[in-house]
Length: 237
Ligand code: SF4
Ligand code: FES
Image 1 (cartoon, rainbow, N blue to C red):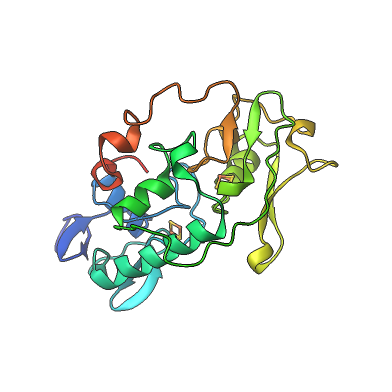
Image 2: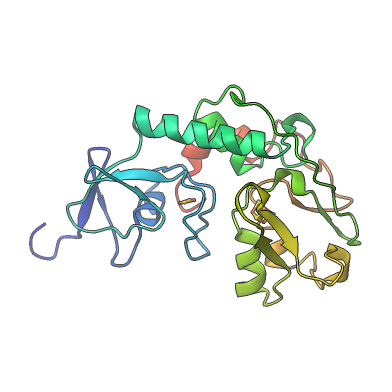
């Protein structure tokens, strides 16, 4: 880098410019360079929990959504090794919950499903846990299907930081970690979550769904049916 030239780092061998303060993932996505991710969303502070965005930075592992871009960094992302790790993480997520894609309202609009396709996941590989996670249908307008939760905390962040309602939280430890609803009964119907809340539409998978609006857009004509998640990187998520 010389003079006033924009600072750059190398992503998979190609120079990528960045703005001061941007993370590797922000800079990449802004430029239309896809780095797989699940818990990151451009409108929220990074969370760094899913590790799907793990890259190598000067040979050392790091989460692309939390590592700040710096001049001269050598970042590897689209490598066989890293994509194999991502596929394994995705397979673990699929068996840890109950993801029956063909019958899911979010199929074709689901970031988990789209990322699994992108990483070439063809089966679960691990034994399914089939956890018992009853659906919460207590809210008049919104269904909560815990079976598909990947614990990305986007609904927690949206409800806390944008809606200022704190409807959701994550509780428990290890394999017992789960999404919680902040009401005395633990039921969504006893919160003030509204359909117009950001938290009601931010879920990247099919957990938080509006009632009475199923399959308005037919499967086959949805976001990730039209183009792969990597082809929709620019300015999106
Ligand atoms: Fe993420 Fe959706 Fe689970 Fe909330 S309900 S933590 S947005 S997967
Ligand atoms: Fe970076 Fe989830 S997107 S850790």
